[in-house]
Length: 311
Image 1 (cartoon, rainbow, N blue to C red):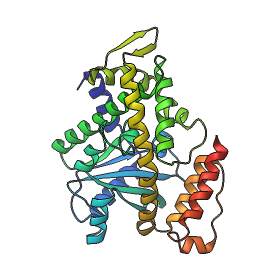
Image 2: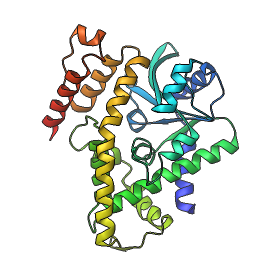
Image 3: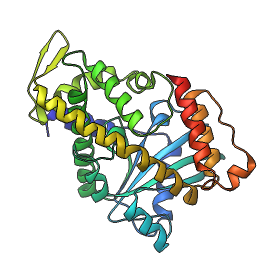
């Protein structure tokens, strides 16, 4: 691992977090049937602390796991990871809300490579993240290596999908536009700029570092990058991305269906997230809230309508 990538990731993973976050992580570790390897804090609340927001945690485990010891939940995590739960924890008289995903280290690593059809791991964890709970130093190193792989994968896709040349931020903006579309995510126009806001230098220096780690040749002049890629390599990448996009939509629809069984009032959470990310409300009747699986096609149609308004 290059010194630049390693030092950047270690600094990010070990940066202090508010007491409410570390307390919540301890609470999750205690609630689990077995001891997790580590707990990662990431997402919009990390980028901009918001007491009314929903915190995002990923719990990294030794094998498929869930909050309880229910065999069906563990089976669901084997078939379609991760299992995701809505949790609340009171800290200093304040209720902190979180979305908590459970994924084994093996599952995490499988989804962090250039060859996975599932973008949900590497696209999230190429962004800054905090390791807010860890079992021991050995597992801290394993998680560091997994995050490194996510960053390198993202950097390679940024080169393969991006322009022939340009400044680093253009490659990152373009990449996140692709991943949002592949994941059927509802986001405000220009959402990628929020991801980079205040972290432009981080992304600028890390992009060429990931190319060096991946042995991808490139030229750089006055901040303009030019990855040396053949026409055939770009054509193959475009073909592979079409497969990723085709797989991403049904994968995320299936996860929406599964979330209905693990999220308490999951429909309300989804409505909150859509409103937060787009500024638009999606109407859902009481009947739809009581029967989220039965009425899922109608809900998805409305979400797609909101997406079309963002373009």
